[in-house]
Image 1 (cartoon, rainbow, N blue to C red):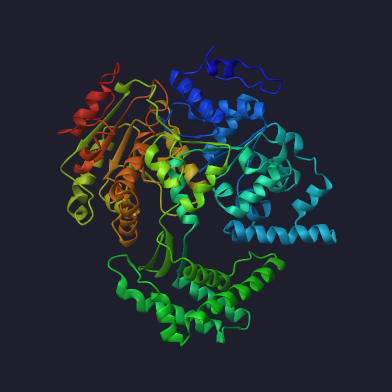
Image 2: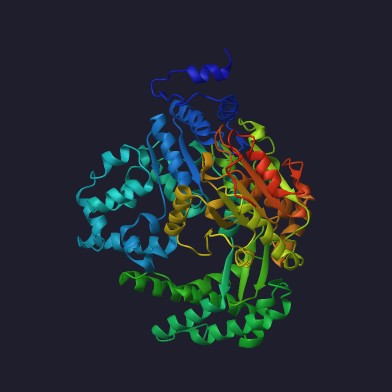
Length: 634
């Protein structure tokens, strides 16, 4: 009997997991490959189109193997909707799973207080520790939810063991007046599967805490990374830091409230002014939106303006950090968000001094809020920790396995796979037009023509999503559109976005969004909920200084800078958007790319040039019975 068949049929006393659906051929191939990787303590990176059932195909072999061999599974997700899908499949498998989210989502006090809701993981952790210590040492309900948890530690136990989403646990915790975040942490050691955001694994301090709570060393972990195409950029951002003029102004306000103390012999308000002067003097390096700074450019400005020596700058950074920590402690004591702009400025200056490495680029960014940035071009400084787990599975509907392996520094022998779509190829058609473009420097000439195309496509009367490379272009095209459309706006609250999505699902029509927005990834629109996707322009990143620096970096490292920085990211964004169309065998849909550069992607995405887009779209849908009367007269 083949090893995979033995694996699927094996009935270990604790390995009772059975596949909960009829297994498709493509899923069987995934299960076989993942099983082989688990047995070999290896890594697999694969692309499989949306709707192929990747989640259950990864969870099933991982759960059976983990039960048999005494391992634990960490499943990393980017969005709450992905977490909900994993929990749904865990229930079907009958395994104990816990879904974690950050304190800003699971702390009732943070949900009740808008200031706290804006806190980052470090700030909320500091406040939480302070309040928990007071509850334990003084017996006072500094945090009533944690106080009640200590009084009734088993209150949420049975509900957690039933396996629920993080939001469901949160609501039950609020109902019971018990802290859901701390209650979940108490039961992590019993869970076979922990579902969490990327940061829980990538951030070294948070990872150590998670593994301690799970009671498992790194080498006993099976790691699954969902929507893995987002993983490298998340790691880059985690290793980057920015200091803006607005942040410095807030530092000055903060310093005044605390008596304007001295750091390295200077009043902190003066330090803020000196740093702003340095930022404005570095504007000469800005070419468009940003510019690359020469080595030691900031230090030289501070030496000139403040008459410091280079050693004094490090002293300045450390004294700002020390005073900022005092501010954070004071704010935490007063139940305020322990945010300190003094602390952030000190951390920035220290990081700036330490980050003289080929993998970092130092930038001056211009606009309404000028800033300095230390940007990490290479994510592998964080992602290489994946090499130390027992095995890992990296999957996405849009992934270039070889390139991904190199970016995150997985072993050369990692298994690389591209699985085919299980759905009929004729159910999806991609068209492009070649008389418009959003190419940088040319887009202004084509805005009205692009809007004309969009308006005609909306006039077909099908449920349509239109994706733009930027909010700016979205707004410009929107001005020309006669139809009523839903719009995902910049910095829209998550709750508002979900309301918008549900409105579209229920009533249909048209929705405008941007690449990388909530609408473009991880959502299902089965049947006729979504029938047309319009891609306005190729979503190449704007060729600003930071992007050009990354291109040079990957040219030097792999000899393929353009591919890594421009071609593959643009292709993945387009495939993610198109992937919203086909999620099950009956689904049918049309994708339309409004850009002449689309032909450069024919090898990865078969497509046809259209001379009459409305006619071609109608012809596609008229293949269905009774479609002739469905469209509007054009």
